[in-house]
Image (cartoon, rainbow, N blue to C red; front, side, top):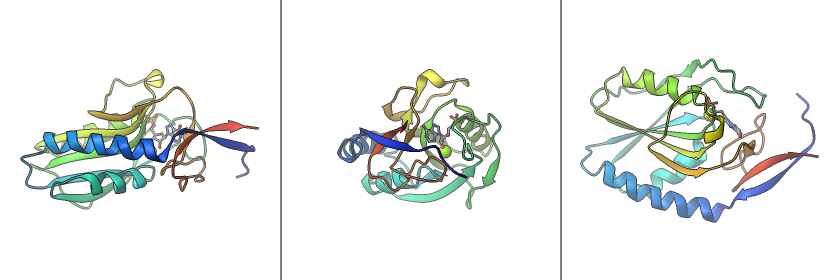
Length: 178
Ligand code: IMP
Ligand code: MG
């Protein structure tokens, strides 16, 4: 698919992201201080950089698993219909679970995923999102921890894509069409 030409303007620096993750990791360690093992669940694909940095800041026994929900495709709008494309490898009944998401936008994806995982009977289930666009919310849902609240802009970088591009940028930037 051909894309309209655009540039990426830096919005959150790599340094600011790293500092924020360090602070959030301390809060997560406190919340799960008594855990036998924390299952950290990354939502593919956008959270892969975030989860990699986050787990390395966590001084807890962790396991890592991944879940893939249907996404935007190449569009900039939510389809509002969420399908599970890849489920977890492991069970979570009676387990401590931390779901790691890149962005909560309309809230449809996170709401669907949480309801599905809650039915499996985890001991404790918490959610962390790197970014939150609260003004875009259509489903009432909140992360337990949020990295940064951002305005209604389409962003890329640090794992997050536009039509599969720009995931490798070390910072988060907004897409500006030229
Ligand atoms: P929601 O279901 O509308 O909350 O959509 C959440 C998902 O949409 C996120 O996990 C992202 O994959 C994607 N998304 C939302 N906003 C953006 C953006 O600004 N850039 C890239 N992907 C986004
Ligand atoms: Mg996503």
